[in-house]
Length: 215
Image (tube, rainbow, N blue to C red):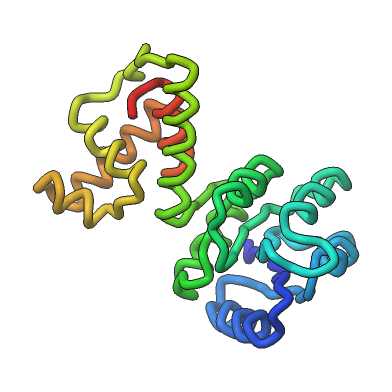
């Protein structure tokens, strides 16, 4: 199935250019555009997108409020946030309201298209800087609550090393270089980690590891 995508951004040139790039990908269908949250709320019921690609800072109704109202209206469209602004509070609010992926606008068109396809399948993605913020916040909360490691979920020492690097936002290539192993080996470790933690993406692996006190 080709994901149906609604692009929401108040910067017309950026929005139109992004639509053109994504439409040229061939694996996505751009079904509409909106310049703010209110337009998005009107278009979602009509266009029935699988994924809403959403800016956070917009006039009339910002991204966080838009996500909240989409959820209140019962929309099951997956939300991919794309913004220039990585303010910690906005990150946490957007994720709390139900955003599945969070990318900065300096991401490549390929990265954005990949995130949209993953979101359509129910898988999340966070920019590395955002992943670090989320994991750091969990660590801060754990220290405040006196959290202590209680369970390794059956992970090996090497898998925990891979997981710690993943949580810092390292790519497979960077993990391989740091641990002096092949990228294929990293991929095998990640498959095992996802299985043992019962997650299906890197973000949730990092968050689950934090819950277990492994980071």
